[in-house]
Length: 351
Ligand SMILES: [Zn+2]
Image (cartoon, rainbow, N blue to C red; front, top):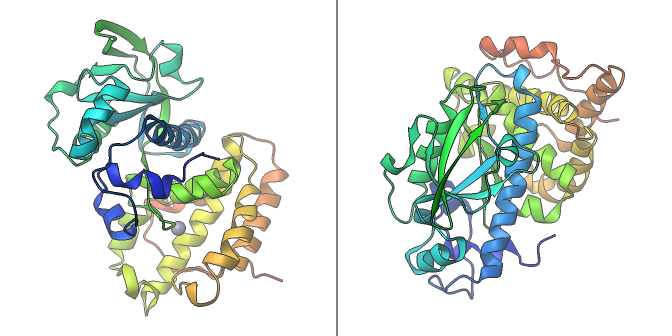
């Protein structure tokens, strides 16, 4: 648990993505241009690295399940641009930015750590990617996203030369990546509970990290990650579905329900392959479901949380009886097909 409430203390000095802006409520009583404390900046770092660590573990352990891969290096980047104007100098001083892009954190045990890269190394080049040539816009995550996408486009397992500045001194390291499923991960600060996947990125609200045990947080990430591995966004668009308030109406419903159940089913394989207890997803739903997804909060586009628990439970029983790792579910082969809308054959009803 973090000493600070991320959602309340940290939102004001980071540039929100468009999605955050639409989801996060204004935080009362915190001046927008308030200079962030070192403690607050370290709390953001810890939270970003916690998500990066879960993402790295899921993405590398499940690489054999993914038809789109990237090099898994184990570095979490951040940029000066991300900070609001009033916080940028404090961030530059605190993190020691000597270039616009730096390492916010290194995943423990990752190829980057093994190669000697460290937090607060300012990055100049990663393989063929000249980071200095990537343009940014103050107050946005444009430069961060462009850098992440460029690095993700490198070959998934070829060694990369990383050039950096550490304490003003130039250095370099050769990192031999692990192949990883291709996806970005972004932690959203704010008071809501966003969790989404747009095909290339998984976005998760910081409150999941603050309020749920680590394994259950991984289960939320695994569900969203499953949508990307199954190419759900593209396949839903191919069916012409409507998002937002209309998602629960008419012909949209069957496709959303099918993708939700498919993501629930795949998520327990992702967890098991990465060494997380698959039952963490059941525990998550039993806490989250009644308070956040029941009653009037219930979305018609999603199956009832208790049916999702029953469905997940039945799949875990199959995983438990099969010691093979990585486990590759047969349903994965369907991702090249159009969505059928058949969710009834996937669901196991609650007793
Ligand atoms: Zn979902």
